[in-house]
Amino acid sequence: MVEPSDAFQPFEAKMRAEGLPPVAIETFRHYYEALRAGSTGLLSRDAIGSVDDVPQAGALAAHRESGVLALGRCAVIKLNGGLGTSMGMTRAKSLLPVKDGLTFLDLIAEQILYLRHQHGCRLPLVLMNSFRTRDDSLALLARHSELASDVPPDFLQHKVPKILAEELAPAVWPANPENEWCPPGHGDIYTALVTSGMLEALLNADYRFAFVSNADNLGAVPDVDVLGYIADEDVPFLMEVCPRTEAHRKGGHLARRNDGALVLRELAQCPEDELDEFQDVSRFRFFNTNNLWLDLAALDAALRKRDGVLGLPMIRNEKTLDPSDGSSPRVIQLETAMGAAIEVFDGARAVCVPESRFAPVKTTNDLLALWSDAFRVAEDARVVSARAPELGTLVVDLDTAFYKRIDQLQERFPAGAPSLARCRRLRVHGDVHFGANVVAEGEVEVRADDGPRKIPDGEVLRGT
Image (cartoon, rainbow, N blue to C red; front, side, top):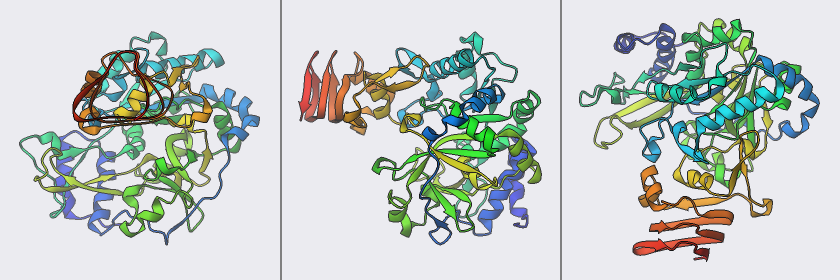
């Protein structure tokens, strides 16, 4: 236990003035004191080993009946605090139309309602919002009047002060005080569940389990086989993982501590001289999908035992105070990952799931693929592949100079996405505008090295 220091007092005063609850302040104190004591948050090869095998979700059908019964005591929590700033957005990313005019939140609502009708159960949808995403997101969900449940529809994540890298003092930026704060990572979900009263509300309404995932992952819906496995085996915490490929080399991977406990290691926790090993997909074989299952009673007990501070591994990120000003002071942002709680619970497990359960939208590349005929909306409102299996994973690679932002994407695809149902890879370099009913087949590369180019309506693209 790190001894408290007087150096934290300015942070405590700043957080109290902002109205942050005591548990959130004490959680930040825990990580700040660890930082002052010299903790880097790094997890080296000496402390961990690889995980060679985990149970397969496809082999859990024997637990289905238990899962159907447990679904009535399960809540779905979606992380909905992101603004999609990497794509030039200033509103919740989940408000983006992604398929047939439906937004992420529309599709999530339909997924929940489908499961309710299919199994005759409660299954509430709860959002973890930020102050910036709350109002718009709740307004959209209000259009789905059937979604109303016996618990509140959302709770708010916290924010924490940025720390000046040299002085380890609170960052101050009068030109834009919002830049003095940062999100504490999605590991904040456990603190926010307590301070908001949501954990208590769920337990009081007799909910025992929660399925947690990102709002931008339309493949993440409750799986009754996995839920039944958790209920039958009394698993307190479960992480869904997928086999790592070259496309997932930089994502957080599953590992095992020397004492046998499972852990999650993120890229920011890897020592610089071990980065090659971190990205070795044959050594660390499974990545975290950020689809997690919680036993809410076990979580409540763990939080009470630790006075509300789970003590997840710290992630130390160094950035500029003003993200748009590279000359602004260097600051440290202290974060945690919610998947890191796998090491907190005795008996925590991981299950390998199909990659169809991991379909996040992080860039305009992902969004264009979703817009296209390479994906369709299934009866249960999941977005699934509409491509022949032998085509493999569709790769879209758009020039970030012209397609990084949503408005840039819409400007260059005014008639919508080209047909990608028979495309393996679409690579676009330069300023290319696409007409209506364009078709891309096989491996396609489009270049506009000498200025803007227009692809005519109905053009079929093959090769370069």
